[in-house]
Length: 639
Image 1 (cartoon, rainbow, N blue to C red):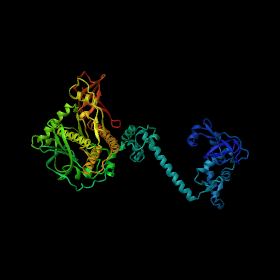
Image 2 (image 1 turned 90 degrees about the vertical axis):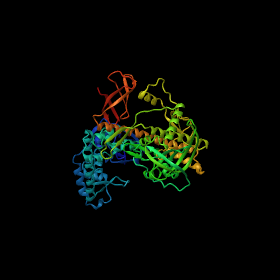
Image 3 (image 1 turned 45 degrees about the vertical axis):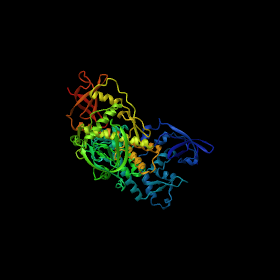
Image 4 (image 1 turned 120 degrees about the vertical axis):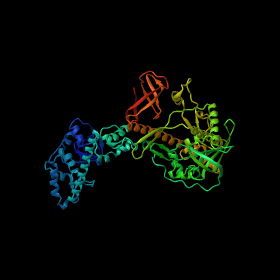
């Protein structure tokens, strides 16, 4: 029977009944878990207790006395008997051969058997010792507080598991000490999985970091993995950290369908960098029309199909120095990239141009075309040939037309970064400026402009790209300083279903349609154009807006990861080349600090020059204090 001052179990913790009100008991219990560490920390005094009203079914009495004395909770939890384990063992030896204990033995009988001087003060200690013993198991019988007697086999198995657990705990404690000292053993990598997951953005926190006293900081976790040798400093975490796959899409496209196509005579030219593996555009002039042929994956990628959804989730092909993670399956290139098979199938934009270079008419066809792949260098060497010369002339006129309409031309140095997959050695080279690259750019802009007008005239819901006019400062300096200032004045582009001017390129209405193999917005534009040509239902504006917004958001993430990855490998390059020095161009003054561009690695630096400089003056700099995890580096002037 439960009386005032009775010692009871409440949620398996010790409590004292301080008062009784009708059918409710007022109990006092510890406000912290009664672990050995907490008991040692708080002692018998100096801890807080909580009071609560409970029903009799919520508590179990472990008091022996009919008239319990009043005990302080601290006095109860500080009871200790060094011989308790041997006493429990002796009790088990007496009971293990007794068939009468098959249904269990009451706690009170067992407690007296364990300690003949058992009293209320010892109740919690003895109960807890029995609960944690190998010899006895708390009965599931809720009608009475009883313990079952374990067999020798059960005891042996339990002790084996406890020893293993103790060994694991000891191993982990030793590992945590090594981690704090950042001196891990090779076998410690098995304990660092949650730190890796945290550093890759897969989890919000790491128990290992917490146990070792480190802050839950993703950059510090990255540095710790490098410092302890779990990660090599070359490890690029950014694609996975942003949730992007480093593998190309898996689901393959069907072969291009057998359908009626316009056979375009002559040869079109796919002009690109020598390292390009996915040519998706080709250009030609037949004497009257400019033809811009674009890869045609939309012939088999239907709207809202599984391939379409995957492409939408990816947004774009991810290009990082390690390689490309393609929006569409790698094996689709053979069928859909232009010039890799003869003939090539394309969605083609036929443009008739005014004398000024403006578009007079744009028509869209499903075509079959012969394509020759050549590099920018090859094209410039053949620029005066009958096939290519008209394209250079069209490009020149279009540049003049766009400039007259306020186009902003920015020419900042670019680099191409590659990584040897085996050695992880990084190479950085400046991208050579070719006139043919300007030609290709202008043809793509004409195709995008023509497609936008075609879609608008035919009331096709379409992904239009626009940009507000920049506020370019007066008296813009020459050289890189001027280019740098111009970039800072540009607004972000917008993608939507309503056409608007793209001030940056000097075009009144524009859409991107020339890269459906690697940009989702281009793919969905092709799906709409094909549906219109075939007389099939079109996606409405609301659906288009939802899909292009999702694709554009994913594409923006790709761009961010590309920038992060390029910076990562640039820092790796600097670490691999500790004697590197580079030319830095002075482009802006901020107080006493100068802003510099470093063309050879396409990086920006801020430092205090050793002497006054004029804009576009050059100094030599050297890298120091390189931190891969925070992507920071300090460039110092070489005097």
